[in-house]
Length: 216
Image (tube, rainbow, N blue to C red; front, side):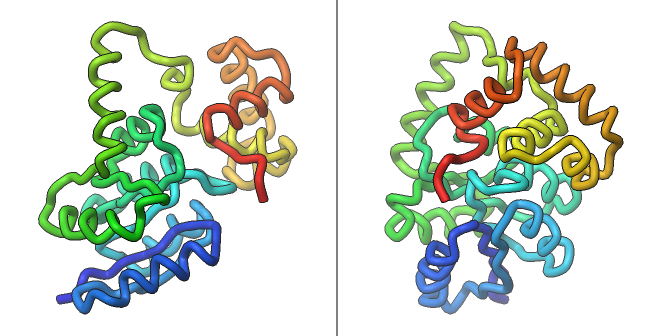
């Protein structure tokens, strides 16, 4: 039986390129495409893919939080993280969220098929550059404390991303199905944990951490 694959990336051209790679493999079937993290979560519920190729940086809901939501509901799905960030923080967050593989976009055409074969076998796969960063992370974790980012809970990270993307408190409350007071509470807790004092500082932090982008 063919492995059913969902593509999740907010760039249509990237999804088109990925589809062209996968369609060369008769053992793979692309069953859907998502242009955001929220859409990826919804399509996983509707389509039940075997594998999701997940962009790490997407609007509304980034790949880390989308991965947590998907695997929190459907444990059998294998997530292949696809990222332009060769940074130990992103690699660590995706692996903690449950991703089975991490591939850099710059090497996607050469590494993706290896990653897919590995996750189909039930293995974990890191492209060589990501593996090197993971080794550095293990070494550093033995000698240093955790980062402020790691102190934030999943909901706080969602709120932070939406704040950084310019969404208002009522809009965030509606998107997350929580009250405006709860959004304000999350914002205060985020500022306290990160030792930041206003929305501008929160936005700069989110961009620096790769949670949101300044392009497109």
